[in-house]
Length: 477
Image (tube, rainbow, N blue to C red; front, side):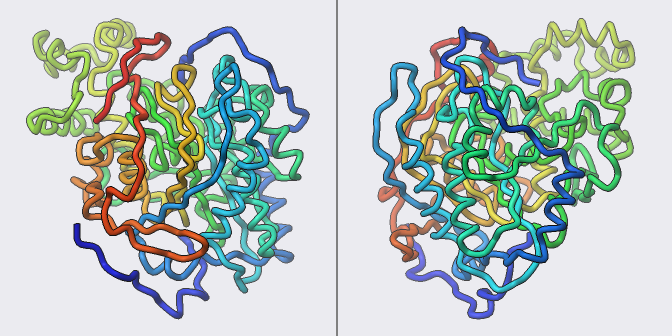
């Protein structure tokens, strides 16, 4: 494999700041970690960040990274230990914290730009009771996040907040122990999960136009995401998801979008009804023929032989029953659609999620993307799966390239994986690891990966579409 012997370096770049409802597996709970902290809402959080700007110095992304937006950077960590009787690496908190510091110090340098704010968005999703521990591989490690924030503070970046909409509530995160860790290090946590989109005020939202949209043409994020002086760090987890395959920085963007707009996992047949009658969001923000667009893309991808495409054979059944003509006759009848969904639960759902997620990636641009893979996880992304000590962190400026390399390290082929393959098709990024420049960051030095064989891979398979049952089967793209 041919790779460059050096990476581009811009001397002026040093002065530039980068701007840029799941039904879970309800198993008997393990030991509960009950925290005392609480979440901050968007308005309060925005006020706190605004007040903190006068005392803040923004960190600078290393110029070697800023000058190479398509390059992916790998940082090895040195966490040691064994899982406890519940499968958690519960003795590794200090090591995870130190790893977070090392990673931040490998990517950032002390800057000189005054003002601004930093928002770190981990993957703090809903966690089932059998994974109540801050060491679960279901979420970005809170200890790692805390160490990362600590290193930025040491550089003068004091105006930092952590947060994630996450499709869950404060109590769930308290039981897991997220707030225990954040309280210990005096880190403010925003909880932008409101019950309904109408609960968000206009001054809590930023809007983003989608270039060349498939599903929707305008997407909101909650503040400060989208503010011109906000350093947005998308900090995902190295794990799988029952619907998306691997769930990395692209999927993590979903938690940057407010309630209502941020539910990408809807069924194809129900979404129009939910937009108008449940979410009460603006139908004008969606393309008028999105259902037909999704169906045409699905058929294109089926003809191309996409791996695990229509895994349950839903579309074949739909075709046999008359396809669009049959569905169009009932699509405005709520009860008929509900019955239809029960018979076709995965109809076009993978294509729908993929294209909605890629619309959001085209519109929402984090300053930096990071996959925390110190502890990785196989399975379905929630209660089904095992944690693995992988000791790798993947970082870059590009969502697609970062996720392609992360998926490859997990044992998948990103040239086959649905969302990375579709991203390349839409011109949003490269998905072939052989064509992506990859570099190590070791002891502060940046060294190109000469051959992919240098990079250790793992077998973190996906329990696809399993929902609440353990099939025992893990698939790999």
